[in-house]
Image (tube, rainbow, N blue to C red; front, side):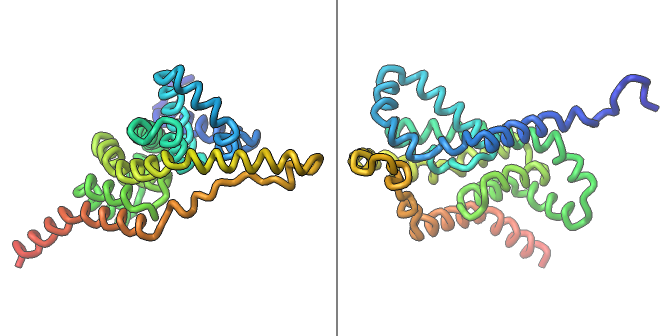
Amino acid sequence: MIAEGKAPSGGLNRWLPLLAIAAVAALVFAMGWHKYLSFKTIGLNYEYLRTFIGQNLAGALVLYVLAYVAVVALSLPGALIMTLAGGLLFGWQIGAPATIIGATLGATVLFLVAKSSFGDALAERAGPAIASLKAGFQENALSYMLFLRLVPVFPFVVVNLASAVLGVPLRTYVLGTFLGIIPGSTAYSFAGAGLGSVIEAQNASYQACLARAGANATAACPYSIDTSALVTRELIIAFALLGLVALIPVALKKWKARNAAA
C-alpha cells in the first residue's frame, strides 16, 4: 500500500527527464533556432569564428563539444553539418576528437534518459519475440553496437533509443558508440577541413549577388554549400564493410556453437 502523499515508485518522476528533453526540442523547433545550424550561418561568420577560435581555442572547443552534446541529446538535425564545421574551424586533427567526444556524450545522455523513462519498463512488458531479441543482442552487445554505429543507414537517434529498450549495458553502449563513430567522424572532419576555399568562394559570390540584387537580395541570392558530394557510395560501402567486420565475432561464436551441437 502506498503511503499517503507519496507518489508511486517509478511514476511521473521517471518521465520528467524525457519530458524536459522533448519540451526543449519542441521549443527549439517552434522558435526556429535549429535553422541557424546551417552552412549559411557558419559561412557568413567564417572569418569571425576563425578569429575567435585563434584567440580562445580551449573555450571554443568546450562550446563546440557542448553544442554537439545538445544537438545529439535533443535529436536535432544538423549533426553532419556540425561534424564538417568542426573540421573546417578546428582542423580535422582537433575537430574529429571533439566531435567524437561530443557525439558520445550526447548519445549517452539520451540513452540514460530513455532507459530510465521507458526502456526498462518496456523491456519488462515486451513479448517473447522482443525478449528473445533482447537476449541475443545482449549476448553480443558490443559487436552489434559497433555494427549499428559503423553502418550509416541506421539513424543515430533510433540506435540510441533501441539500445535503451534492448537493455544494452551502459559501459558497452558508451564503448560501442565511441569506437563505432570514429571512422565516420574522422572522415567527415577531414572533408570539412578542406571546405575553407569553398566557403570563401561562396561568400564572395553571395556578397556580389547582394550588391547586384538590391531590394530582392534575400530571394535572389541563395546561400548554399553542396555537401551531398561528400557522402559518396564508396564511403557508405566502406562503412558497411567495417560494420560487417564488427559482426565477425558474432558469426564465429554462432559457428562454433553449431559445430559443438553437431
